[in-house]
Amino acid sequence: MSGFLQNTFNGLVGGAFYALLALGLAVIFGMLRVVNFAHGAFYMLGAFGAYVLLAEAGVPFWAALVIMPLALGLLGMVLERAVIHRLTRLDPLYNFLLTFGLTLILQDLVKSRYGVQSSPYATPAGLTGSVDFGLFDFPAYRVFILGFTVLLCVAVWWVLGRTRIGMVVRAATERPELTRAFGIDVGKWVTPVFGFGIALAGLAGVLAAPMRAVNPLMGADLIIVVFAVVVIGGLGSIFGSVAAGFGIGLIQAWGEAYLSDYPLVSQTVVFVVMAAVLLWRPAGLFGREEAPA
Amino acid sequence: MSATVDTKAPPARSGLLAVARAPGWVRYALLAAGLLVALWLPNGLYPAVAVDILCWALFAVSVDLLLGFTGLMSFGHAAFWGTSAYLTGLVAIHAGLPFPAAVLAGALGAALLALPIGYLAVKRTGIYFAMVTLAFAQMVYYVANEWRSVTQGENGLQGVPRAFFGADLTDDYYFYYAILPIVLLGLFAAWRIVHSPFGRVLVGIRDNPARARALGYPVHRYKLTAFVLSGFLAGLGGGLFAVGHRFVSLDVLHWTTSGKAVIVVVLGGIGTLWGGVLGAALVVRLEDWLSFSGFEAIGLVTGGIFVLVVLLFRRGVWGTVAHLLRRRGAARRE
Image (cartoon, rainbow over all chains, first blue to last red; front, side, top):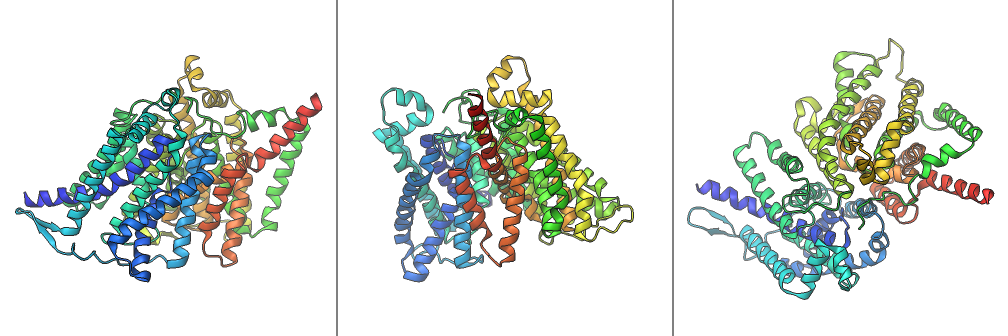
């Protein structure tokens, strides 16, 4: 029993990263109709930024947790104004290609400066021990990640559900034309929302730094899994993306624990689930059918 | 945000009708020029680079068949290119067949894989289709990565032979001429498909899926057929690539390879077919030149090209030429 709880906990922690990234992808897609391929690269920049801040300027984890998302969020806003903005009127595929190119550039920039080997990042002071849950104990840092992510999701939830900006984002995500027809200036919110989505990716990266190997390619394969997650949840649904993120994290952790002889299972289960969802509910578990194309 | 997805910067019917409308002698002149260049190529470039260009030309045309003529952007075509490369390599190593038979086996395997992936992927359109194909291709990558007994994992398949009825093809120069007919056949097949009644329906689906459905065409089935044909062509290129390099590594299945194929098409010109051939020549040549000059960060340049082409040059090389020709033709008619 305690083993099962431990695995479940691990799954939720892994799922927290998917949830954070999927959440950012979903709000960006909702407002801009852009699928940001570079999301994984920004996650990597968040982790790398935290590592560089600590190694070269002695900036501790807690400061990096604030600095990196803000810096990357600003960078994202500049990016949106400079290039993404020019393509939003065209087919979404163009921005997909653009951000794909951006991913290659960002990865190579970091690679050419820091090489490809992983850099260690110490667990922040105060979270080095483990927490005793009675039936099992668990690394304190992971407890923190889970608590922090859940709080963050709830906060985003509250903002989306209870504030004016949230109302605009939800409306624009679900029914863009209708929102405009009501005379709401959706365009005004586009740049900040894009920045916010990127900031979430950067935040996930900083959180990942003490737990996972920090290297230029850490976001490369992760982003593909996150794409599968948002296809499962339904890109048009913010709740669906977060739920699918945690769900896939759980399934992967259980697969790793109980089918450890078959590492392929935990690697590919997300795609198998995606195939099943495509057969059963092509629009995603929580998505609504787009206008027939 | 409209329901119809316009995957091209120029209006639909760009290359397709432009070339068809060009006077006959222009088309034959272009074809003759292209054939002459193809025959001369290994004398002007390193033969190994020329071989790569041929393989990538097939790959690009297979992607354009979907992107330019069916309106589906596959971002997972490395799955077919790479699966065929591994299959071809395995058949060539273990069965000792002449290399065209091994390549054919690889391409058929790729088409077979395209069937289930295509069946699931065509349930979605537009950007979702791109994401779904990307995800399934990644799954294939993970399988190849884990299945070391077959793929040799990180080491890759070594020593893929170039058996051909006792002929000595170890020199890339002669190997180029051995594969040229196969590649031309593949390109001709793509051209035939596009200009057949079947291809016309695909273009109709691309331009207005709802209308195609209303006219009674089974849209899903058409898309799936196009997907499988495209997978076969990509497999043809991947198989030749494996024999050409005598070596297959996991790179052939990675998503960066899928992305590169798409950018080759965009650079050449979406929906022009021949643009893909040009794009392949440009990108392969550039990458060879970069690696030769000892430049490390190839991704920086490839990524840069991506960004610039998408921002400033969405018609691509061939698309721009066709567009200018069309404008001149229109001006003369007025």
